[in-house]
Image 1 (cartoon, rainbow, N blue to C red):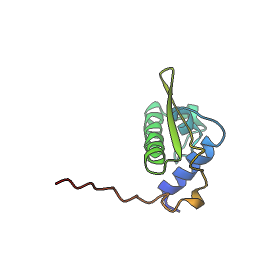
Image 2: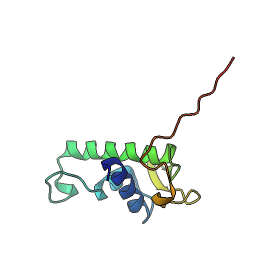
Image 3: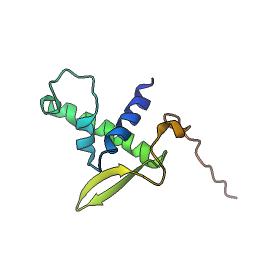
Image 4: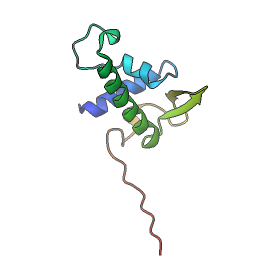
Amino acid sequence: MQMGLKKLKEILAILNKHPMPAFQIASRMTWDIEAENWDHFPVAQRWFATGEAIAHLRYLEEEEEKVIRENKDGLIFYSLNMQMGTDSAQSPFLGQKKRPVIKLTS
């Protein structure tokens, strides 16, 4: 399985529990680093992991429309878009790039 697709599915499973900020999502994801747990990750690695989680979340929000981003008192929370469903087997685009819409003007 592609690493990106695996991460996308993992994020959807994590968000199935309840809305949370990207840092919390990243702390629950699987990472290929030798550390006992998230608290033992080097600080820089936590930043990189959170950045990667945000990139995946933005893809799920903008391309797949499976995730909603909400600002709650200055903190960004991500949750599942229940209107779109979350079963990745139903989405033929999960893990694939959607074709951009090109508007021509004269």
